[in-house]
Length: 275
Image (cartoon, rainbow, N blue to C red):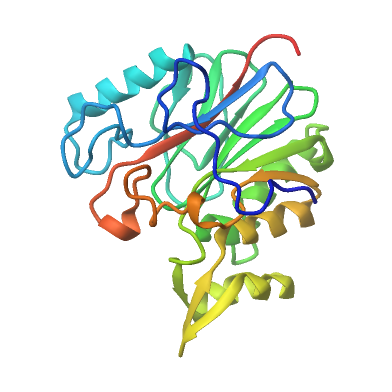
């Protein structure tokens, strides 16, 4: 499994027109695939949502969120479609008539000009594209959605299984992991560790003991393990190092764990016609 170089900070600037604190995935995606992850600067929201908050469910003024979303769309030149995320495993197929607010924790499309988009403020955004550039996807992976449970696959496996049923195998996808709460900050209980270790003993390597019943969890490593086990060999982006941690970089990223009342950044991906 190939990954980004250890401790390499995220790229800045998805296109020349994008703000300096936006991220651009460093991966060998086809030329017709474009992706981004916003920062928190350059928007219309006041504290504590300052300033480019894209979440309409966190208590921010609706007109500020609308202005921020319009700014992102204008910057990208395509329409980002925002979901109502619930830490589940439902992944929506996007079409041109899809409205914002659909209940899902991910989306995919083979249509050009629609940006599959997820919002995060500690959870892990996972962007995917096929090697031929014909399909793209964005998934929201908090620990609950990543783990699945009660006989249900996690969001990554659920998505890949649904794509396999359409004839697109896991090995045809590559993935990029965006910023999330890092292993330096993500303290969890025994029940979270058990949810992963019961699925695979290898998940134990993603947890460091913090104290009785307490663990520090490496969310991007858990996602890498799940993707690799599902058949996605090429995974790039977040390696768990400090520059990717939403909690530890308050000037760049929103973080619910750090601030409790927080905005949301977004990660998204789209394709244009052709390869």
